[in-house]
Length: 422
Ligand code: HAM
Image (cartoon, rainbow, N blue to C red; front, top):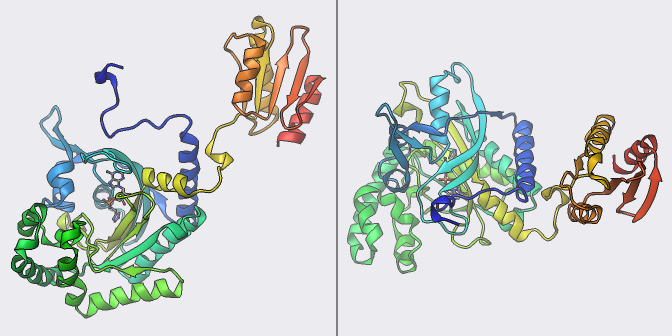
C-alpha cells in the first residue's frame, strides 16, 4: 500500500478480532471502579501545552521531547494529551468538583507520546486511570493499591507482577536530597553516560532511573531520598507500608523508583512484569499533593494511577494458559438462504428471533453466495447453530454442538433456541 496511506508510525488499529478482548477488559475496569465507588470522567484529547509544561514538568522527557504540540487556527498552542492526570486535575479545578467534598474519579482513553516505537511502546496508547481528590491520608494510597491488587488477581496476573514502592517526599525534602545527589554525581562524573550528564543539570533525580549496566553499582550507592524524609513523610510512608502488609499485599521498597513526571509527592509505585522485555511497567502512580497549587491558591490532596492497556493486554496474552471464549466474537445463530431472493424473508425471520429471545446474536448471510459457501462461512464464524431457509420454504436447523440437523416450524425453532442457547 502507498506509504502515505498507512497508519502513522507507533499508532495502531484495533481490529475486529481484537475488540472483544478490549471490551472484556473494559468491562473489568468498569466493574472494579463501581465496586470501589469511582465515577467516570470523559476528558478532552486536546489541552493547552502550558498545562503539561507546568504539571508534568519542563525537564521531563514527556514535555521536552515527546509531546505532539501544534498551533490551532486561532494561534493557540495546544497538544495531544500525553497523560490523563493533568487534564483530570484541570477539570476538577475548573468545574469546582472538590468544593467541600472529595472525589473519586476514573477515565480511559488514548494518550500520545512521540517515543521510539517498540514492543509495548506506542505513540498512541491507551490508559485506564484512577484519581482520588481531597484525601490526604495514607489510607487512600492503600485503597488505590488494593484496587490494583484486586484487578490483577481477577485477571490472573498476580504471580507475573511485582509492586515496587517508594516515597519522593515533599519539595523541601527533595531539595535537600537533590543537593546531596548532585554532589555525589559530580564526584562520580567519570561514570555518568551522556544522557545522565545532561540530566545532571536539569533533572538529577531521573539519573537514578538509568538502566545502564555500567552505572548500577554507583547508582545503588547514591544518596537515598528515603533518608532525607522528615517525620511526617516518614510516617505517611510507613503507614502505607503497614496497610499493605495488613492486607497481605507483597511489595518491594525501591529507593531508586522516581517516576518520569515531576508532580509526585510522597508515595509512588509501579507494577512491573519481567514477561514483556524492557517495557515491563504495566502501571504507575502515586500521590501528587502539590499539583493543584500550580493552578489554584487552594491545596488539594490527590493520588492515582494509570495502566497502559496495550501493555496489560500483551501481558494477559503472554501468560494466559487458556483461550477465553469471551475474547472472541461468535454469533449465536447464522441464517443462510438457499434462494437469493429469500434475503428479505431471512431478515424478517432474524428480526423475529431477536425480538423473541433477548440477547440472541443473529447474523444474516447477505453475501449472495451459494448455500455451500454460506455454510462454510457460518462454520468459520463458530456460531452455535445455522438456520437455513431452503428453496421449498422450510426452515432447517443445524445444531453444531451435536451435528444434528432437523426441519421445524418457526415456533419450534424459537423454542429450541430458547432451550439450547439461552
Ligand atoms: P506513566 O508511568 O507515564 O504515568 O504512564 C502510565 C502507564 O502508561 C505506564 O505504566 C505504561 O503502562 C503506559 N504507557 C506509558 N507510555 C506508553 C507508551 N509510549 N506506550 C504504551 N504504553 C505506555 C502516567 O501517565 C501518570 N499520569 C499516572 C498517574 C495517574 N499518576 C497519578 N495518577
